[in-house]
Image 1 (cartoon, rainbow, N blue to C red):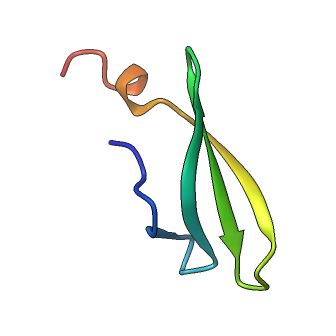
Image 2: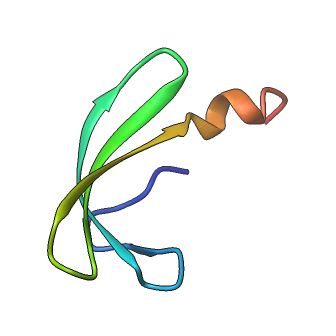
Length: 53
């Protein structure tokens, strides 16, 4: 599962704006915090976490 544009995270503190890059082990997203500042969120690719799907 990847995060979609507009999805809110961490008790609505961050909103995903777009997927920036998908690498071998991680996905990097552009997000906006509650103050309107852009932040980058990097997370492990969930497909790697569940190899037996």
